[in-house]
Length: 56
Ligand SMILES: [Zn+2]
Image 1: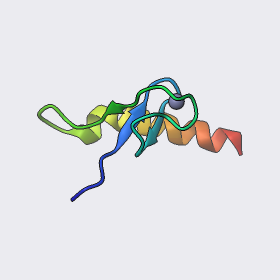
Image 2: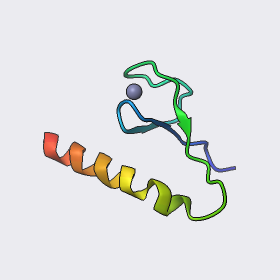
Image 3: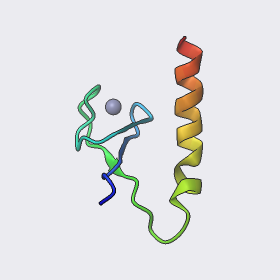
Image 4: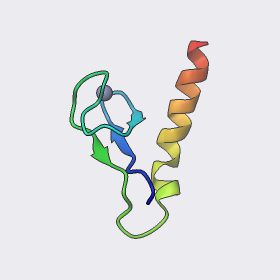
């Protein structure tokens, strides 16, 4: 079983929680509709990565 990855659109952040631990918003499922979940969420992952590296 692959762990269910959820996404907080408020924080642009991935989490396993159904509620964002940071802002307490309900997180969205990243489960794909049909094709290429990597592509669909890739830009968010990139953004997340970029923003994280900026902070350092
Ligand atoms: Zn959040």
